[in-house]
Length: 289
Image (cartoon, rainbow, N blue to C red; front, side, top):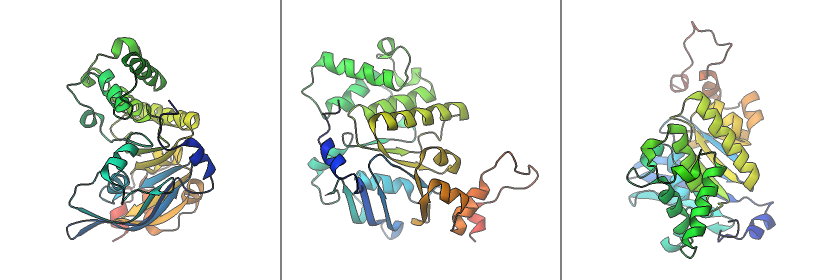
């Protein structure tokens, strides 16, 4: 499956010293309301960047801009390049070749991302056939089974014909991961992939993503409001507030020596085993007022 991707792997390896994803001076507005203001960041081959901030800070708008999935009313300016290719000026047909192939996305809520009236085997197969209609039906089925096996879904052969509601929340998230990875993308955008899961299942999904990242040398943009989660998966962290990136640093540096007051307030807002249960948690919003 690694040969499917239209972005040549040799090209990615040759540019190992250059960013795989290069976002510069990106701004997004909806009418007169700015959502993202002049942000810049890069993701190198094989690297995970955590993008964190409270709800409404512009994280998801940024991810949708990369894939050009924002509504036509959105005003987007700046520069987004993938493997050296500018994405914003691409014709729509060329952009479709990137979506789900060289760049894939795991959306936040599986029950809204999955089609409730389609069997999950057909949904995973559709992600493959959209980019490779030439593959024989028998080969498609085998690749779907392999993808289900890889993400840890039990009894793939028996569950191909089940519907989304017949799976648990964690299993539905694994289905989305299988759909995202079946074409062997080079960049995976994970938008709050563990938010709706309990702590145990969340840990399982994070472990799975780590394993898949290492197995396939994936680069990842991991979006979350949860600093504890980001600390487990990201090599570097960018902190967003009110549509701007206020701080970027390697993960360990950011947690040990946060520079921006908003970053410090986010870290203080996260409870730990040492937190005084009688003391109210810090509020990132109140701390900045």
